[in-house]
Length: 354
Image (cartoon, rainbow, N blue to C red):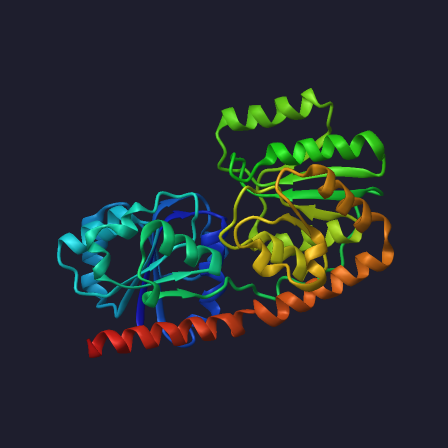
């Protein structure tokens, strides 16, 4: 089977990471190609894989499709390209993968949605959203969770660089990820404790205005924040391991998540990850992991969870063990991508019957 993936941004973000995670398995069972509309330095996630093209020209994408005779096109939030391919009567079946929840998804309800072979989403929450809000056909909407390379993402031996506990936030510097909430949390903790430091990881693609806003808000609160704007994907396990080794944790303050990739990355490395009960996050945090969740904007509750993880040795041990087990059981590449590829084969076979 020959598959073409089309996505907007070649950057070190959630979607690109997911495509890279799948690649090792997929290239052993099929022939995957990738087209990105713009390059933001994410090629390193794919190592030396050479079937990657960057172009924003719809005509050249159509030429590429005709040249390679693909069996499937899998488009991720790229309305302008799927519109064009439909308009030029591209005969290759198109599957829509929907990873965003804040992105404009109106294209899912347009008349041409009948041309899509199916929809793949990473969580039951996302499935409910696109069915209820955008009338995607329930019988052709499928949930396949995100996967993680659990050989790469595991606890690493690292040299500590601070004798304080690291409280770490990972994400883009945008309102949706709510970095402002993390600064408020850091301010609250700093008023009571002197054994913590605060890191923000991510934001390489942020505008100068957004960056100035971050530093302005940190200075206003008299906070010393360590900002790491970019880390290579293969360096992230060391980061999470360093946070874990310090006795700290990661904290998400996101207003919504279609999955929650950074959360399972941290867990896999033995780093407890605190998160709000928004979007798909409750689907991950089952059993004792629920004790690591709080209602969005309830920073008092979040602060209490941080204190418990930092001070209660037994609770910390339980959460580390259960987090690692959860990721290995439900989100390993082999487990998830086997399901994923079986679904693609099923959809492709069904389409030929139709």
